[in-house]
Amino acid sequence: MSYRVKELFATLQGEGAQAGRAAVFCRFSGCNLWSGREEHRATAVCRFCDTDFVGTDGPGGGVFATAVELASSVARCWDAAFGTGGRPLVVCTGGEPLLQLDVVLVEALHDAGLAIAVETNGTLPVPEGVDWVCLSPKAGTEVVVERADEVKVVVPQAVDPSTWDHVEATHRFVQPMADPDPEVTAANTSWALSHCRAHPRWRLSVQTHKYLGIP
Image (cartoon, rainbow, N blue to C red; front, side):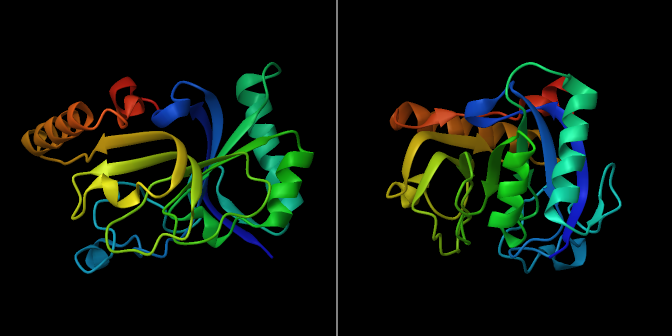
């Protein structure tokens, strides 16, 4: 199988339990909750996504004919940005990465010396061998992932984060939904803060990369 990747870039993880960690982000094209096109946003299951995952024209993106070809590109991206030291990490994201990430690619990435994290909406099963699972569920979907390293709920949504309390997870985060209107973003942040105070099982996640101006 070939793999369609929107972009491939080195940065620091900006949110969640691994915030601040060096990583290569592999953003796969496509999602099962939204086409990625603005004309379809109003009728999409997930309407608040702020990421461009359409096509393969981003930096480092393209169509990779084999898992080994993609894994080699990820490893080269890490080496060019970070050199040696620490275990290299690739964050598979999207869109929805589990539309494409399979056991063949997991094995190829591991063979290239990479730890694998995935950021998923949870509507598809996670292939064996993934090292870190970040579940970011969306209202109105059937979540089939029953265990994750972290659950990260963008808030507010049409349902309470407790909807996903049944998922076994080491870390639980609420993350304020970003909005072009600063007042709406402030209101969402206030909602998240109130939730953490009332439910101390949950922690606050913020998108530090946006504050820092990094990818």
